Each structure stands twice: as structure tokens, then as C-alpha cells.
Image (cartoon, rainbow, N blue to C red):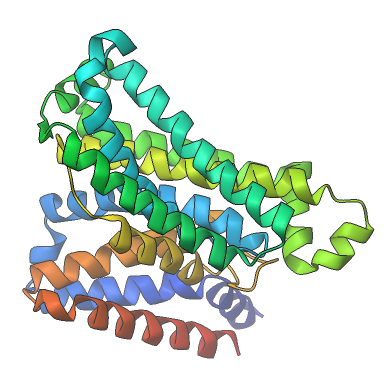
Length: 319
């Protein structure tokens, strides 16, 4: 009986088991350098950015869609900062710029949802087109905007000076609260039930009176907002704002996180809190590639192989 219960727990948390095994192997292979406090902190901070993106992407995937523009939201937000910065005093300082940027990223997410609902075009096509638009706008903004913004991190630190080590505690605290809120919304609200229903069967959800349009608009708006929030987290860690194409990298991670976390890519199923394990896994793989000095040109190949092996391991354990 005890053995059976233990196997049930292992099957339920297969990716957690896979992650722990990978972590042990990583620590051993690196000569325990990977277990240093500095390195673990680096993994955790990167996990914060990836988790925020994963939350936005997960809600979309559970609802039967996908958002290929969520990574580009980071680049677009960075570009916006370079354009808005000269008008900082007029806009109310960095606070005003951050609020405007988050509103704009949310608006682009809303536009994604509106087009998908009204035209019935596949989310893949619509969000891919939006990704191209956002990346193009980011490049344009960066060309005409200021080259670098160096006062952002001190402003953030002063804003959260009541917390110990704001550059560390703020991302961790924000990520925890947002993950908690997303988990409650997904499982304890009418909106949450609706996205699961739509992802499970669009026709059945329509027939049962689920407000498809409203749910789609909210879902993609939240995805846009999470993209903007991920930019905020990213900027807090980097410490300055400059033109940088991080969108493609974070797009791949935003899709890998929910998939590794057990959210079905076809929609309708998945447990939101588990995507944190997926985010930890993806961030640890990236850290592994850097610390082990693997050729950067092979980064995606190594990441892909590890993810496939982990998913196969997970599938075998569930049988």
C-alpha cells in the first residue's frame, strides 16, 4: 500500500523528480560549483522572468491557443523605454513610463485576442504576425531612442528600499505572488473554468454558454501584460535599459516552461503551479550550458535534447 502510494506521488510529480535528478547530475558533473550560492541565485533570478512569461503563455495554451508574440513584448517594452525616456519628467518619471509601457503591452495582447476572436484565424498565425510587428517596432524605437538608460535600477531599488536586497527579493516576491494569483484564478474563478472548458472543447464551451469572446480577450490581454511584467523583472536584474533582442530566446522558454510543467500543448489540461518546476528546469539548463562552457552555438541543441529526455522520462514514469 505504501509502495503504491509512493508510486502515485512520483507519477503525479514526474517532472519534479526529473528536475531533481538533473540537478544532482549537474552538481556532480560541475564539481559542485553549480551548488554555490551565487550560481543558485542566478538560476532563481532567471527563473523569475521565465515564470512570469510562462504564466501568460500557460493561460493561453490551456485555452487552446498560443502566443508567439509574448517574447517580443520584452523587446518592444525595451524599445518603448528608449523612446519615452527623454520625456521622463513630463510623464511622471520612471513610474509613469513603467505604467504606460505595461498598458501598451497589455493593449497589444488585447489586439491579439480581438483579431483571433473576430476573424477566427489560428492563434499561431495572428501572434506570429504580431511578433514580427513588435520586433520591428522595437528596432525602430531603438534606432531613434536613447542608446542606454542607466538610472532605472537605482530608481527600482529606492522604490523597494523597505525590502532587504531589492534586486533579489523583489523579483522573487513578485513572482511568488503572481504565480499564487494565477493559480487561484485558474482553479477558483469562473474565468479559470472557462479557459479549461474552451481548451477542452471549443464547440462544447460555445454550446454551454461560455463567453468565448470575453475570455479570449482577457486571456491574450493577460499574456501581453505578463510580457510587459517580464520586461520589468528582466530590467531589474540587468540594471540598465538598452536595445537587445531577447524576444526569440524568451519565446522558446515561454513555450518550454508550461510543456515541461505538465500543461498539455493541445489545451484543456494542466496545473498552473507546476509550471514553476518547468521554469526552474529551463533556467537550470541555460545555466548548465554557461557554467559547463558548452559552445553557445549548441545551446538550443543541448536544451532541446535535455527537454526531450526529461519528457520521455516523465512519460515512462506515468505508465
